[in-house]
Length: 285
Image 1 (tube, rainbow, N blue to C red):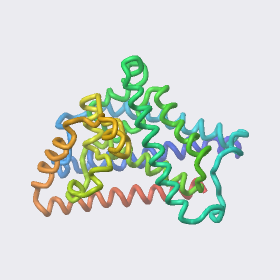
Image 2 (image 1 turned 30 degrees about the horizontal axis):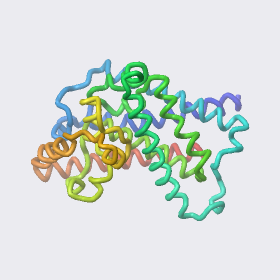
Image 3 (image 1 turned 30 degrees about the vertical axis):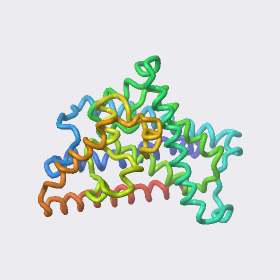
Image 4 (image 1 turned 90 degrees about the horizontal axis):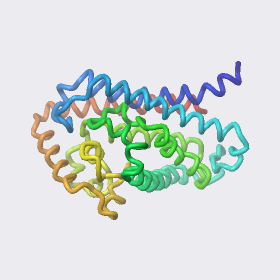
């Protein structure tokens, strides 16, 4: 019985993370408060229930792949070759947050080139078209991949843990942050604060508008976390900044009271997600 639970646990944790981190934003933006966030919606069109069902089904498939690869590494001799460590003092304490940042940078580079590659005409229809059926994506689309694309996306995990020393808590933080940002990119609503547009962060980090434009136009904006590779390689969509500015004007023409209410709702969502992450992290210990 214990052996069965050991093998079932990775599946349960991944399913829980998916439904919590994608489900809470979906409930807030799509079911409970769509009226309050109408000015935050990036595309006017509405996705249908069949789109949500398709996205959930294929995302569950990707979660199964994640769990299977995790089990393959942990339950086989491969596990002894990973750089994961559990003793906090094995490396300087500052390395834990730094390793998360390094992992995100490596992942962004990996994602950009894999993503751009599967947009090649010979690969797009066979590998990536399924994800692009979500022309107006929802949080459920975050892991909605074809089987081959799902494997390609998940392989960054083994790559990182074999080349980068990471404390177990850093690994949990990385995978959670990665998925949370992925949900934001597929949210279908822009929630970045007003000050973000005129800050240096806008020049570096992606937004929900950035990735939503990729789904809408099918080309450009291949990065996951950062604008860096797209800008270096000339693949950022030329309409991005103009589209983001239109969203800024649309959003912040609302009353300050409504803006404050939106801020409270978003803050509540973040707190709920972080609390859920803490619970999932404790389950992994």
